[in-house]
Length: 441
Image 1 (tube, one colour):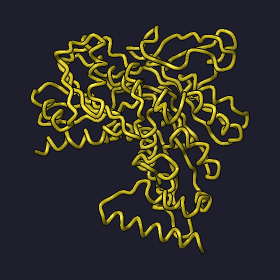
Image 2 (cartoon, rainbow, N blue to C red; image 1 turned 45 degrees about the vertical axis):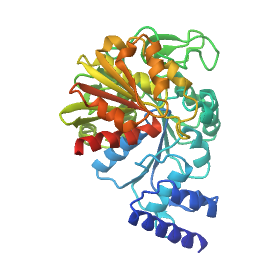
Image 3 (cartoon, rainbow, N blue to C red; image 1 turned 90 degrees about the horizontal axis):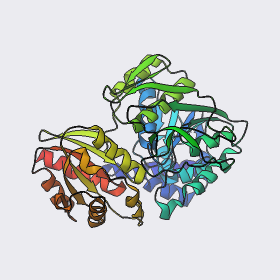
Image 4 (cartoon, one colour; image 1 turned 180 degrees about the vertical axis):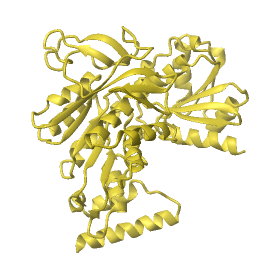
């Protein structure tokens, strides 16, 4: 009875927040957690629960899983807004449960912050865990990558469900050996046109996690993601469940088991996300024709590799909250032969992490070769990122910093040249909103 009263109370708060025009992504969860610290135990779930975790790409991948299942006719409950910590997930469950705590759905999908995986699924059902990648991110909150990996590894020692792993990230693939009772499914992507023999960007996967021998790479896709093996213990030679071939970013397509999939995005980074989704769909026997149609129409449209037309000026916006995210965005500039201008917005708010030293691991070295004719920087650390770009050798007379975001955006659109926009976590939505306001004006 107490739990029913609590759920009714929280649902009333949710209605009030909606009337006020607020989503309250974490608010309901925070209240619920204070009133009942064990609230995750009261929910009744009778359908598969799929969770996606990673440093980069979990929002896109989770939302694509949810979208594809919905397009295939299933009822899905998901935290699509991206509230991926414990309170955000509790909020999602409260909004979608009956008064008795029952969740009526065919599937539940969550994106989950890496550090919260052990905490949430210690008490809540989990059938399939998808792990995409691990990179250094928000060091003042998360610590080093190894700290996060060991936390998840400890959780996996008693996990008996399905585990979908990116085999091309040695820090992810190692988790397939956490215990023998898991059902492990690796996915792999063959080299795309701009894969390299040498590491061009900062990366974490240099040594075998089992025997500490330096890994040998056949190629790098980006950062430390690529095809590797340990010459001593043969780590990296595990069998892959799904392999993507014929990756063509110009055609926005890839092939798996003889079937061609067309997608909305043109980044090697997102191809990996789609192959992860495809692996999950196969595990749950979702019709491949439905998957093909969903991949062709899925678009996140929240600033993650989003394409906009602002007063007839093509604009591509992407999130970059760590060096790898920024380097992937810069690769898009490199692979685009048109003249372009760049807006880089960098904040150091609590959610971003106060330590912005990660910008020195961004590979700006060849920026001047990418036909970038002008750069504008903005955000609370506008001058830091401007100095970082200047020290890379880019012509400082073509860099203009602004502490005022609105002024930066107005200056950006004084020309009709194609725009690329890179923004970190708390900067992304304000930047997107300011750009869209300019379009409406």
